[in-house]
Length: 205
Image 1 (cartoon, rainbow, N blue to C red):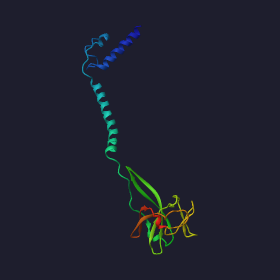
Image 2 (image 1 turned 45 degrees about the vertical axis):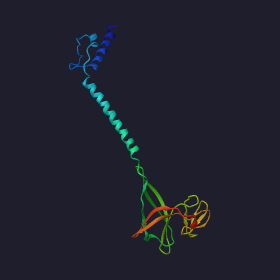
Image 3 (image 1 turned 120 degrees about the horizontal axis):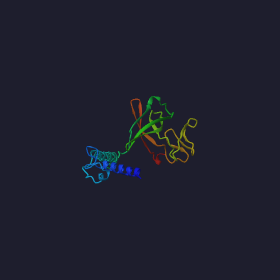
Image 4 (image 1 turned 180 degrees about the vertical axis):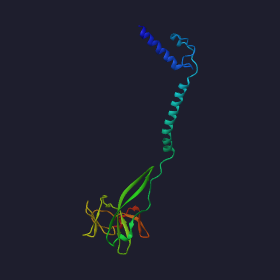
C-alpha cells in the first residue's frame, strides 16, 4: 500500500541521516530521491556521534576509577593493626572508700582497620586500708559470669556457680580456678587511669 511504502522510505531516510549527516542535515550526494539515499557516499563520523562515543568512554573511565582505587588501596595498603587507647581515665581517687569496692563503667575506643569501635566495659575498683588501689576485671574466672559485691559477706559473689572472692581478688570458695583478673592502673594527681586487663595466675589463688 502507498502509505506503508512511504513509511518505509521515511524510515530508510532517517536511518541514513543518523549515520551520515552533513551540514545541511541530508546525506552527501542526496538528490531528493529516497531510494538513492542509501547509496550516498559515507563521510566522516558525525560530531554528535563522536561526542556520544567520547562520553561513553569517559563514563567508563570514571566507573573504573571509582571501583579500582578502593580495590588498589585494599590490596596494596592493608588496614592498620588494631589500636586501642592505652590508658582510660575512670574517675578521681578521692571518691574511693577503703575496703568498699566500687563498680566503674568506662568506654574504650579501638581502631579496627578503618573503623573506630567504642566498647563499654566495667571494672571493680578497690582501695585497701593501706591506700593501695587495684582494679579487677568484671568477669568470674570460672566461666566468665558477671559477679557483684556482697556487703553482707564482705566478698565478691558470682551467682552462676557460687564462686567467692575476697576484696583482694583471691578465691575464697567455689569452682573458680584462679583469682580475679586485674587491670593495669596508674594514678596521675587525683585521677585514676586504667590500662590493659591482665590474666591472673592459678598459683596466686
